[in-house]
Image 1 (cartoon, helix red, strand yellow):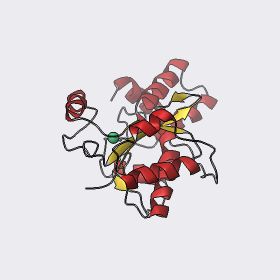
Image 2 (tube, protein in one colour; image 1 turned 30 degrees about the vertical axis):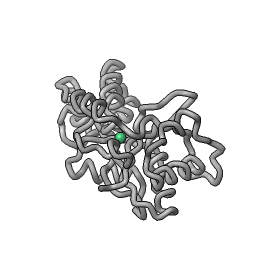
Image 3 (cartoon, helix red, strand yellow; image 1 turned 120 degrees about the vertical axis):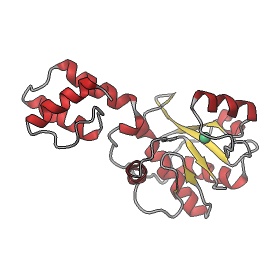
Length: 217
Ligand SMILES: [Zn+2]
């Protein structure tokens, strides 16, 4: 929350460009209003930057890009590191990841599979995980991250196509998989990952774990 963003939202509201709540949170509607305001120079460059920065630094506020279609043969392959990180992970989950890499429109790598208790303790202490009962401890979870231009991307928009590829793979293989980006089972689920995140947020969910996929307990 930011009083500067609130001030910007008030200006936008007075100009009739913004009809949502003046809450100091630069969500998609605020970003859209700022874009509309650019045309009539209602806001200065500093205000635009502030809104964009707040929006970009919070994955849960990011404005979703349109859904990317799956591909027949992606040409992507899991690298050595990814395969190594799948060691000890449940076979069914491994199968889903291996199918997902074949159909994903965006390359990805496995960043974590089985996790030790000690590492889990550290992640909980940092606030990066919420539980000591993580499915990673038992080999029932993997974290995968999109790779864009040879680099791991933390842009939440890049996680939607991965979630879609994983959902399609899980459905094909009949494996029940849950995605941490919306904390919902994605096997046989209708709608897009963007819809799932929207529903999760509408229900008050705030802990979006985009890379995380697990076999539900
Ligand atoms: Zn995870």
